[in-house]
Amino acid sequence: MFKRITLFLLTNLAVLALVSIVMAIFGVNPSTFAGLLVFAALFGFGGSLLSLFLSKWTAKRFSGALVIAQPRNETERWLVETVRRQAQAAGIGMPEVAVYDAPEINAFATGANRNNALVAVSTGLLRSMDRDEAEAVLGHEVAHVANGDMVTMALLQGVLNTFVIVLARVVARALSQYMGRDMGGMAYFAVVFALDMIFGLFASMIAMWFSRHREFRADAGGAALAGRHKMIAALERLAQNHGQNTLPKQIAAFGISGGIGHGLKRLLMSHPPLEERIAALRAAPPEALREGVLV
Image 1 (cartoon, rainbow, N blue to C red):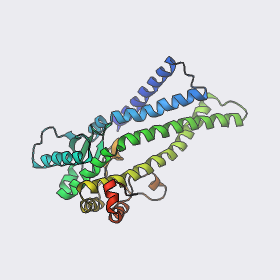
Image 2 (tube, one colour):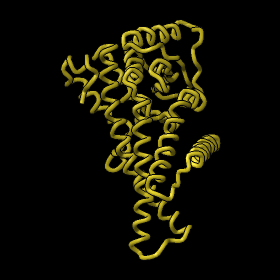
Image 3 (tube, helix red, strand yellow):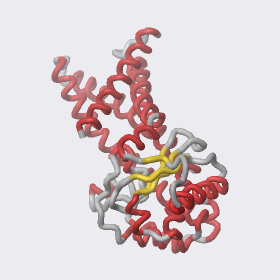
Image 4 (cartoon, helix red, strand yellow):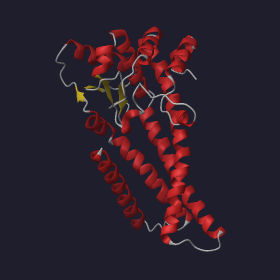
C-alpha cells in the first residue's frame, strides 16, 4: 500500500512539475481563464496519458505478472498459441502473455498500443476453468486490446480531469465574487478541494459508465473469437467465483471480473453485473457478435 501511495504522489508531482515548467516557458498565466484551461488540460491529460504509457510496467509491477518469454509447459504453450491465434484474427500485434498469482478467477489486458499490449491471466483462472472457458476469457481480453479500450479510457479520463479542474476553480471564483470578498488562500483551496471531490465523483460515474459499456463490447468480441457458448460458459463460471478481487486498483477496471453493487455504488462499478452480461450475450443476434456490439 505504501509503495502504491508513493508512486501515485510521485507521478502527480512529476506531472505538476512538468506542467509548471511548460507553462513558464510559454508564458501562460494560470490566473486567467485561458491559462487555467491550459493548466487543466496539461495536468488532466498529463496524468492519464502518463498512466497509459506506464500501464504495462505498472500492471507487471503491482500484480506480479510474469511474462511467458519461453513456454515452460503445455499450459503456457496453449496460452501463448491461443492469444497468438486470436490476435491474428482481431488484426492486432501479438501481445505479451503473462500469468500472475491470485486465488480468484480473473484476467486483464493493458498497454498503450494495440500492437504492443499485455494479456495476463490469474493462476486461479487456470485452476478453475477448462480450456473452452479460458479461451473465451482470452478472447475477451484480446477484444479489449483490439477495441483500443485502454487508449479511449485514458483520453476520456483526460477530458473528465480537465473538466473537473476547470469547473471547480471557476465555481470557487464565482462563490468568492458572490460573497463580495476574496477568499483567503487556505479558504479558497479548501473550497476548490471540496469541489474537486464533488465534481470528481460525477466524473467517475461517467468513466465507469463507459467502462461498463466496453465490457459488453469485449464480451461480444470474446464470443466472436471463441464462440458464443464458450463466452457464456466463462461468464457463468465467473458468477461462481467467490474469491476477492486482488487486482491492484490501477488495473482492476481492465479485469474480466468486477464487483457487485447496488444504488449509488452501482454507478461506480467498472463492470456490469454478470447476469446482465450473460443475458445480453444470449439475446444478441449473430450480426451483433460479428460487429462486437451488444448494447
